[in-house]
Amino acid sequence: MRLTKFSDYALRVLLYAASCDGRRLVTIEDTATLYGISRAHLKKVVRLLIREGYLEGMRGRTGGFRLALPPERINIGRVLRSTEPDFEMVECFSAENACRLSRPCRLPRLINEGLAAMIAVFDAHTLADILVEPRHFVGEPLLPLPRRGPSLPPSGGDG
Image 1 (cartoon, rainbow, N blue to C red):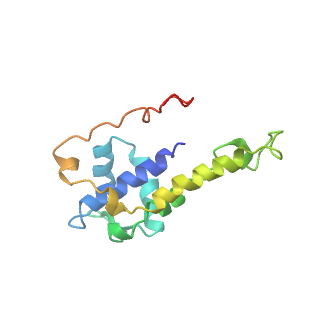
Image 2: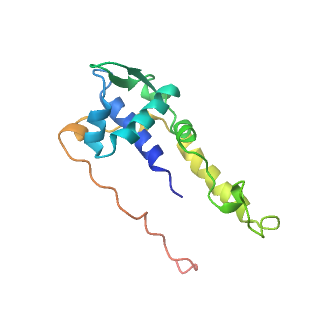
Image 3: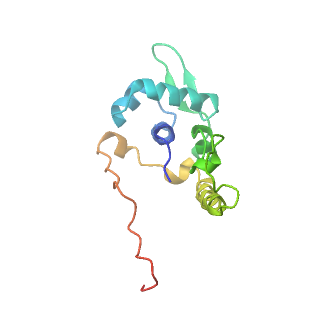
């Protein structure tokens, strides 16, 4: 399971805006520099977050954006539903499905169950639950996340 970069960037924008606590406007330029990502891509992300009511934007030379809601009212699951184009994890979920096993296959039900569990976790949390201390944005570099997920125990019941 993987979220799009768009969703990743949206969560990063919200985290950075929350770290400023409305004391100052955040700019796309500052955000792009902080995260080392494209300004053009961030503009699209910020526009969607403004349209969805998570951010409020101010135009002009001294403009920028800030949270439109307190972090406690920004639900992570709702943000992801706004930023993900779909949750089609396998071909049979799409309109262009050409799989010959779709009718008798039990895999989509299992995948839907897993997806529902994943979304339920996001639905149970708000931006306030994942806030990062402002000093991590300014004084200290953010630690890179591991490239791989946690290692799973081998299957087979040898525990």
